[in-house]
Image 1: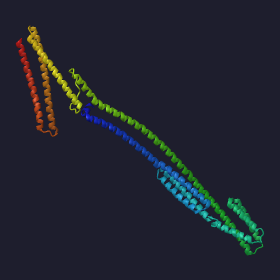
Image 2 (image 1 turned 90 degrees about the horizontal axis):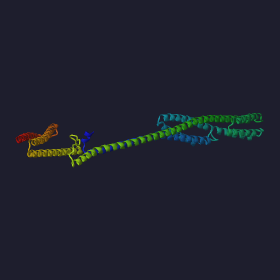
Image 3 (image 1 turned 60 degrees about the vertical axis):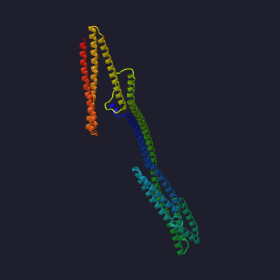
Image 4 (image 1 turned 45 degrees about the horizontal axis):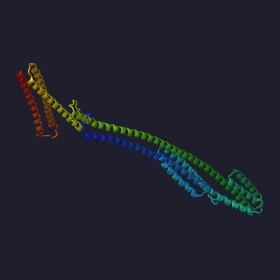
Length: 470
């Protein structure tokens, strides 16, 4: 990690730190946006499927109510515009069911069953309408009109036949029981009408009438009975069809209501599930945001420490350098691009130079003191001790010179290696540009050799002078 950090400049480290923090928060924002997209998709599905299912269920129920109202209006008034309204509302209900069928598989099954029941209901309703057309939509048409005309003709004959006592009264009783039946629809009145009709026919058979008149009266009585029973049969047929129609409508209503209840239940479940998922995502988003913040803080602390810690070490070493010659050095990475690392390397060199200078100065002082003592010595023992100190000082000086020569040789070799690396790296550095570096390296090697030779000669001459003095 330290080697990688040393490859970056301070500005690059700061930029990298800010870039990492920005990337972390961009990731958090992207995650939040993805969560919002999922939540929006859930609500769109809720609206597109379950909300639409509820809407279609309400529409079907409303259309069914309108159909039942138009049906009741027809049965009460026998108006044909009510029949047209039933047909129109049935078409609208079929369109609602078709929309419901497009939502999902359960809706498709429910819509198919609803459409089948509505088709059965319409078939029965059309049969009722046809039955009423046959019976007569008003008193002047159909079976009702024929029966009404027959009854009026019978009343006219009864009023004109004064020879038959009680005929008019019998016809009035027939009409009364007939109206009772038409009003109440009870079969007991049918039996009463049949009984009165039989008595009236017997009365007409025994009456002192001419044969044509008697035959006409009996024909009217037979026509009245025939038309009355035809009207009764039609009423019974209409009653049966109405019951079947009501049964079909009764099967539609629970199915529509069940579909509406199911739509409400599914919508409530989906809403609860979406709310739970939204709550879970909110908690996850909060944890991710906290984690991202913590990670950003860690990155900031790491990058700051990578910058501040070496600066603090440099400051401490500089502070100590003003009062002493420290032995410690700041660790550096060869080939680093970090400005602080370069500053540390320069400071290490400065400390080395100061240490070299101090050591050289101390050695020189020892040598000067030893030489003074040697010149001032009177006895043999004092001269030997001074000569020994002088040799020790000269040896220390030679050691320093050898160390400097070694460093000079190392610098020259490094320059040679760097020049060779640039020559084979293919970076477009020409031999002419590398020539000064090679010459400098050669010069450093020559300087090192010269210093070593001079130090050896100086050492030999010093020993000769010491032996001469002794």
